[in-house]
Image (cartoon, rainbow, N blue to C red; front, side, top):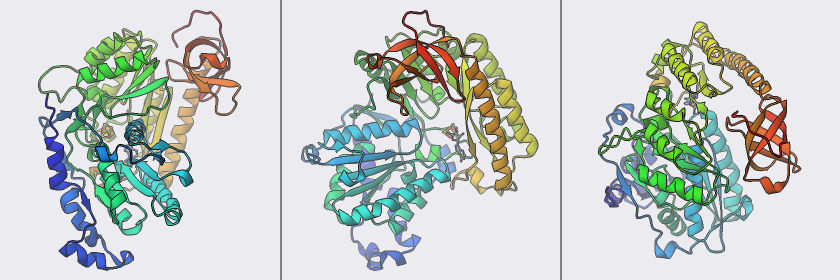
Length: 529
Ligand code: 5AD
Ligand code: SF4
């Protein structure tokens, strides 16, 4: 295993690390007032920092360049730079981003910063952004606008934009052109560079931009400040090589890179020893775990088998891709124990035609066959999914196939989305005959069905005893405790605060659409639900 830092250092020098330093051609555009600058004036940043999403180039990316680095270190001069100062990180999007925020918080804490939830109190504000749909991006631009008066009041405040949006050229252009209050822009591959980037933002009068388009490395031993002491996220892999035609992720998160099993196992053992009750293994497509190893044959099923042996009560994983969900994994999951039988299995569409257009690499029939196998091996398994409606030119009939698939599988919950064109993805280049009105109507109908199925599945819990990992007080009522069942249903019940962090038996008394009410059972044998 390589333990050098050369690749990152070279990348950094060669194609990254650009800030607004005067140079001959930059000087001309810098002389103009910001409002008069055009995209071309900013284009030079990307000559060295960034390549816009290019599906053809991305598809060619190699498998053999992954290096693992174990030597993360904060430079001496930055180790106490945050003393007496506070940071705030606002997170948008998926669990991957939430976990990245934990890492960034870890790094900032090691630099002496303390966290705050009050923007007026913060010396550094980072927006950890999501690019998956247009409305996610719009929210961030709204927030960037809201932060402007703070910067005017306190010019020493550092405002940074990071996460998936900062991997997009148009976004970085727009920030540089229209939002001078942003001091720092860095990408998803640059998190470990935060100490250096902050240093530069502090001492430079110009925006600091560092976005690496070429990824390939895994940085271990990054500090983390985890959210709570009960549940923890553990990255098992980064990136995605599936290239679904609607999805920006393969461009913003880079190619698939798996962490070495020994590093994951060590992290999970450590969490178990600290008393964590539940871990969620994270990746854009966890089923592709290990495909990139050139020196061993060790896949997601093997990893889950190793997780099964670790003394931690609950192990979850997200997100799965049906294509890579193999028989070995099903066999391993069927062992049960700490491997929970809730599987989130995004289907996206019920039409084989649309699935092909989406480049999902499976048909409706293959998906149903996979579901059949899972249910056969794990009769108690509960399935949830993601669905996109209104993919370009999706016909009424094709949408109806999604509706029937929803019923046929009997999903207990689904995240549903209207297709959002993402610049740089193949689907975004298609003309689309379907109006937004029709798409909204479809979404409405689908959501009605999702709610109905969720409600029905919840009803089945009434009268049963479930195991609940108690996470804390309910947000609505501090007399009520709240936690999650093995199948990830929220349960509210009255109980002593002393059981927070424990797994307890709760008898369900009332089912709602998205949550359950229950009564604590002092000593009952739990049913696996
Ligand atoms: N438009 C709408 N939904 C999308 N998703 C991914 N890309 C898009 C897009 N361009 C959805 C998929 C994925 C989930 C995380 O987000 O359903 O599974
Ligand atoms: Fe995007 Fe998921 Fe498809 Fe990867 S598998 S391209 S992350 S939808």
